[in-house]
Image (cartoon, rainbow, N blue to C red; front, side, top):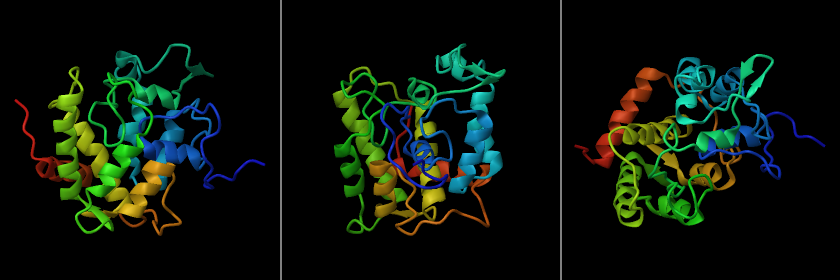
Length: 239
């Protein structure tokens, strides 16, 4: 029996999934195709609003599918065969294409040049991130995550001689974390139980108490301010 839209179910066998646990969670809840295939711009944009992202900010991300020749096609994410009824679509695994929105120094994935690859979640990194909590494992703060990202940078400089991470990749990384902090936390902290649900189960943390932002969905001004705050917390400068 198929699950209702909004009801969680683990990814089916052979499902297409991305390096982004939130996007994967949207598929696992049926807000986009549970198979992770044939994802259209309008569907992804609507799904982003399910986590409290404004339609304007959601469009910034979802419109990348609308114009693959100017972004995803350039990086090889989109294939010319991925057309249906004149509309372009992506499969979630396409988001793992290196250099588009995927980058080295992920919170919970290894780098593309490493044996584990850049798409599958790594349990040891999930635990390391949760261990970065400075209040005994209740919450992760912006400063906690800033320090964790900085430690990941230093570690990967040792572990990955082919590391590609600099002034282009760092704001993308900080932006992804900022979205998590503001859509699932209060902008300053996020409960560790929410983080575990998102990264370990790839599930929206509704049963842990999370509720979607209703009155003030996250928009562009808040987003870019949050990115600046997180970059300050990481404290790494690039030449």
